Structure formats: C-alpha cells, structure tokens
Amino acid sequence: MSLFRRLVQTLVSLGTNAYLLFPFTLDIYKGPLKAVCHPGLNCYACPAALVSCPVGALQNFLGSLRATLPGSLPVTGASVLGYLGFIGTLVGRLPCGWLCPFGFIQDLLHKLPTPKFSLWPPLRWVKYGVLVVLVVLAPLILVDQVGLGDPWFCKLLCPAGTLLGALPLLAIKPSLWQNLGFWFWNKMTLLVLIVAGAVFISRFFCRVLCPLGAFYSLFSRVTLVRLEFTQGNCVHCLSCVAHCPTGCRPFENPDSRECILCLKCVDACRFQALNIGLRGPEPKARTSVLRGS
Image 1: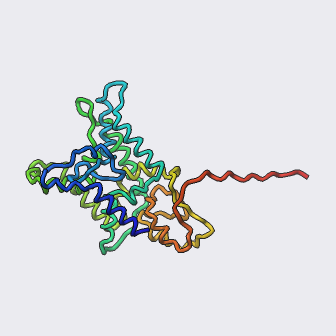
Image 2 (image 1 turned 135 degrees about the vertical axis):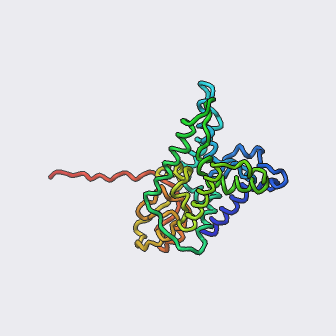
Image 3 (image 1 turned 135 degrees about the horizontal axis):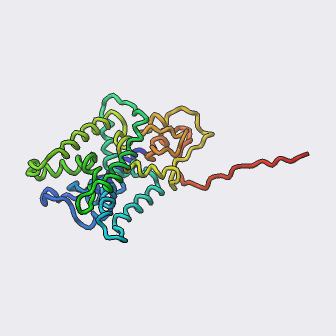
C-alpha cells in the first residue's frame, strides 16, 4: 500500500502542476482549469499549477463578502465551502496523506538521514488557530477602503506559496527581485523553519500549521471512509504507532483528527487489527430487562 500511495502522490503532484510552458510564457497558467480547486495545498501562483488552492479561494470568498452587493453571495466562494465540506465528510484528511503536493514534499524531506524527534502534542492545536485567525477572521475584519480583505494566510505564512509559487516566478522573472519586501522575506524565513521542521519531525507543517488539515479534521468522526479497528486482533505491539507519520494511536482512537489515512498503520499491523472501510450505523446499546420474581 505504501508504494501505491507514493505512486498516487507522485502522479497527482506532477499531474496538477503540468503546465510546462511557463519558462517560455514567463507567466502562470490562467486557463479554465484554474477554476478548479485542488483538494490539497497547491499554490495558485505556482507557474506550473493547473488548478487553484482551496485555502486561497476560501480567503478570497471571505475577503470579498463586504464588497458584495447586499442580498447576494459570491457563488464561486460558496461552492468552495461546499466542495471542502463534501471532501471532509467523504474522506476526512485523506487528501493530506494521498493528494497534497506539499504533504508529499514533507514526506520526502523526512526521509533525509538525520536524527528524528517527536512533536510536542499541544502544538497540534496551533493549526486550528491558523484556520480561525488567518483564514477566517483576518479576511473578514482587516479590509481596505472598498471592503476587500487580503488572503492573510497566503500573505504571511503559506510555505507552498513561497516554495512552489514565489521562488519559481523569481527564477523565470529576475526583475521581480527588486520589488521584494518584508512580506517575502518573512515568508522565506518561515519556509526555512518549516522545511527544517519537516526534516526532523514527520509532517511538521501538516500537524502544526496547516489550516486545510484543520478544516478536514473537523469531519473525522463522521467521515464515510474511516479506519477500522478490530480489538480482538490487537496485541498492543505498538507497531502502528511507530509507523504513523502524525503520531496517532489507532488502537485507542481510530477516528483521530490527526489521522491522514495514509494506511501505514494498516501495512505495519501483522495481526490484521486495522483496515480501511466504510462507516456503518452505530450499534444500538444493549439493554437488559430485569424480571421480578
């Protein structure tokens, strides 16, 4: 399964970033496919990107609400919310483990031969703050004179935008270097820290800072596709814990918000205690009837 997942990650990352004319056009792709959002973190501004980033689209939707005519709603932005909600309800954080190009990059970085460290568990809550503050509240509250908000996550933090968008654009258009300022160097500093974090701590950005992973995780207990645990087969060898890239303990909580359904735990379990399946109806609680003598 791990080899198949790696193949899917490679094909999706290359397939959704297959615009190879940018060295000649010196511009990003702006064709009809850009109306489609990637289910993972894939920067709109990447010169090779064929599709858009859902986090950027969501911020633009929220940032334009005040500038929208009363009684109307930006149809494109509203559809992004429905799109992300549908994915979250269907498969939860599976796109993080299988489809996200930046998640794939982190997996490759973590393979570098260096000492590895565990993540301090409370840090996993930071990504919910990023989702609420930078993605939702900042575009709604920090607006310009005409009522438009900026995509603050993209502007302040997004490492995919810096690595896959800004740096390739600077490579093909060196004249842009003279326009760089605080925002770029701030994001470059954060990119270096995030890349270093991904080398030493598995899926560092996904676990600590990614607002898309935070959004998908809100559906972890209701997703149609889920991790199944058979308690009678488990011998508590902890092999699943050792192989989990996000620090989950599947035998304690198969519906963990940190689970990206990479299925490494399924491969690692020799006793078939873990599998992937569809969520069924919850079993009814058994009731006992006491009969009086």
